[in-house]
Amino acid sequence: MKAVGILSALLLATCAAPAFAQISKEQIKERKLIKSSTQSELKQKASKVARKEAKKLYKEGWTITPGALPIEKQLDKSYMMSYEYDDNMFPKFIMGEAMSIGENYDAAKMQALELAKQNLAGQIQTEITALIENTVANQQLSQEEAASVTQSILASKNLIRQSIGRTIPVMEVYRTLSNKNKEVLVRIAYNSTMAKESAKRIIRDDLERKGDKLHEDLDKALGWL
Picture (cartoon, rainbow, N blue to C red):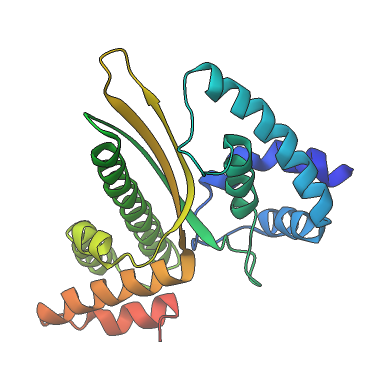
């Protein structure tokens, strides 16, 4: 049951952890411990946390569409996916969440999904920027080179959003407001490897269009060969 306690303590930190930034030895150790935990232990804790959170959401008026999984089951799925790591102990998924209000359910849901994708794009953009800053700290790129790459990253958020492929629906709940409008909350997951690949392709293309040879140095510095 030791892993159960660790799961609860690290839940928020893991959900917010970068998907493909460098991680410390301590983080690797923690993640390996969680990964080695039995599936039943993880499910047991996730269910307990999910039931508590679901109870709160139900009280706040959130509900599900007919045929959808109960809120606690949706939360279970979200928590479990947050604890999936690849062989290098990096999170397998980036999670994006958003809420939107509309006169009808479908309109609110579509807007919420679009906002969730924007949230994913922002996270990808932030993490790539952090990688660039790390190359400067390790003297793999100069400040000037990093500034040029960062400018391309900042200008590419919309392209990154557009490049996001198939996302995994993780959570979808709604509530009816006092004015009869619908408020929809969605949570989606996106494969971290796919996110990194699409982001580096966009940045490479932007640098090449500018006639900037920096993309070659960037490939070497970040191991994107």
